[in-house]
Length: 135
Image (tube, rainbow, N blue to C red; front, side, top):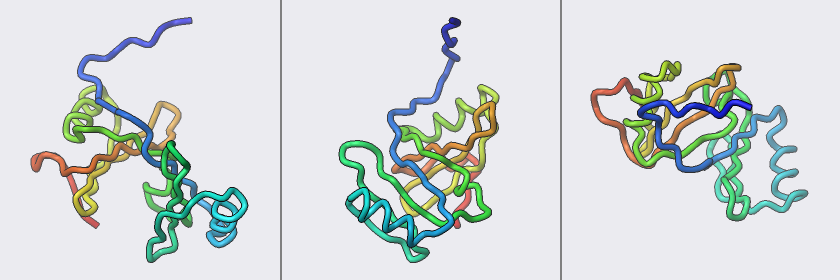
């Protein structure tokens, strides 16, 4: 078995922070995760997206699938430096989205070699010279 090589300037990704679950029936999913599995509800967004705590593990967010890159992300990884993570992924040839700003947090999306979409998230804003947008 070949050991993976460590690329220079790899991004610092500290943990999986959120697991996303796109569903076709939001009410049935909320009943399942909240009542059947007994996960504690943290919040519900105006669009019905609902976050559940999974004990000491990541947060689970259930939402209705939409035609947006956010709907494709399966989970997010947290980083203490989103600017460094973005730059290092770009330098290592990873195709990344522009950085999305949401309040005082920021995130960007990227794909693995099989096209699986993932997200990098930080609880701070990126350097102003990086490509970014607000919704």
